[in-house]
Image 1 (cartoon, rainbow, N blue to C red):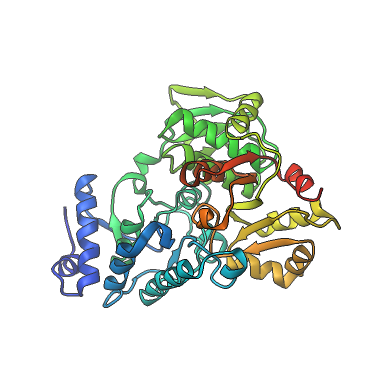
Image 2 (image 1 turned 180 degrees about the vertical axis):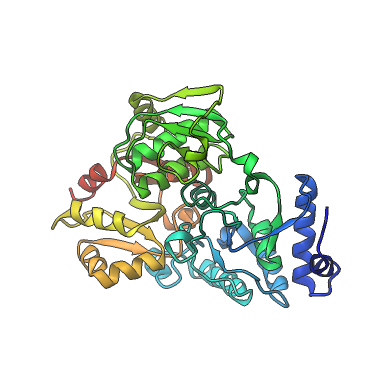
Length: 395
């Protein structure tokens, strides 16, 4: 594997422990995937931020890196295990909060921006078409590749951090033109709302497992529906890129798709997928939206659906601090809170310590949340479109 003089010096330890450790990780990764060289990146996004996932060993590793390490490119963080300001209100135990704050502080010492969101593209980290980046959160990776046209592999937390410190990543996989071509055509029905988009992604991801789907038949879809579609694909499968005919930025380069494999998805298939992911119960401990983190458009839609009706059950929304600040400037945040809606930042139920919060049953509109809450926390789930979810919580 060819290394520049700078890369060789980092690997030799001339730039300190953190840079050397980062290059060791990247060189090992490059050798595994047959990369001929490194490529400079414009940004990084790091997962593995919740103390519940890292534990003491992960925290100690971060603190060691932070002794002499700093990131070389703009770098943002995935959600952690709690809202940094409202963790007490959420019911997070103090001992967990103290450890989580130490994790975030370690990242701060590395000059990582503590955005703590799975939608960094809504919080200032927005790569452009063709930019090489190193992102690790699955729904952010697939959004960056598919909707923004940037180029990143599905990095792990350690490799994304290493790329941020070194400012480069091995050149392989989705950084290469030839690896971004569709491998299967998906003839899909029109979708109505984020839940159906999420279910479509989950269904196709479960069928394919991997590969690059090219969707036909979706016609007009919103940014939030594309976000939900990608999150579903990335949850049930290891998919990091998709194309939508006439919509996504690289779809036109594959207008004459010759993929031999084709998948037919009908509207009834989406409803079947929603039923498969849903459990039977009458009362929920929590209703929430924002997996991936909600946009300002989703907050606005929620407010319009509520009208002047107040939430009678615990209803949480998860969003980035950038989106929350926008909602506050608009007066939207105050109106939602007056109606009993809690808007939390920095976290989401997937990485929060739900077992410590007493949450066993959840209603949401996200197939990603359904998959991870079920498998990671043993939570029972019901999937409902936002309109029905709102009707449930105001009764």
